[in-house]
Amino acid sequence: MKYFIASIFILVSILSNAQTDSIIKQFDSRKNKLNHNGMIVLTSWASANIVGSGIGYALTKSEEEKNFHLMNASWGIVNLGIALPGLLAKEKTSATMYDLQKSQTQAEKLFLANAILDVVYISGGFYMKEYANNQTDLKKQERFNGFGNSVIMQGAGLMVFDLAMTILNNRNRKKHLDPFLKKASISFTGNYIKLGYRFN
Image (cartoon, rainbow, N blue to C red; front, side):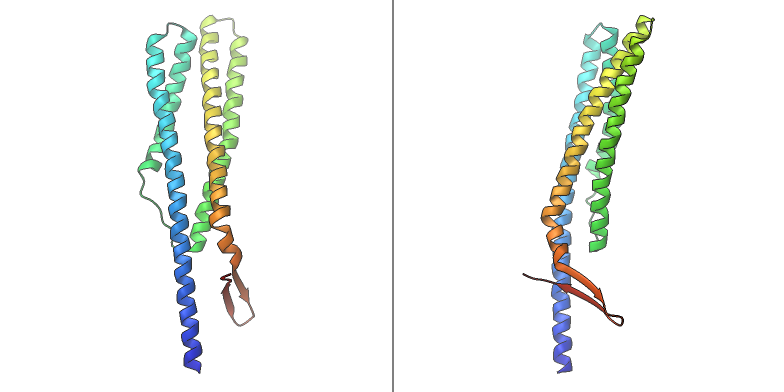
């Protein structure tokens, strides 16, 4: 009888571990695909800014527009430097459910923190425009107006991206990970740690 109970316990443990591993792999795959697609969007945005601003800079004679395109191209280079490593990086897989939860939480917090930082960028752009309005030197006016317009546009574009990534990652977690975690349970009786999972 002892061997039968031990065999049942081992079988349940194996099945539970197999299901957990399957959930981890499936969720990792969805999460990695979502964030990979996000890096494609950011790379495309950065590339469009570099190419478009290069053409715009060459075609315009306005100093304000030249400064606008110069700042846009600079942002594009920085964004490309951020996006390319993420785009080319090997997909990360989580070893345990704890690692999976930790990486998911970090991703959501990172995108949300970036969205908040984007508000600072937009505010900085408006400050540059206000600074330009208080200048008597025409070149300074044109420079800071151009820079300000670019920073506002870039901040707004990045805020849309970061908020979208926050929402998509959050929705992915709520749909595919949280239901599994709600069925799992851990309890401590004083002498034993009990792991449980509801299959219905």
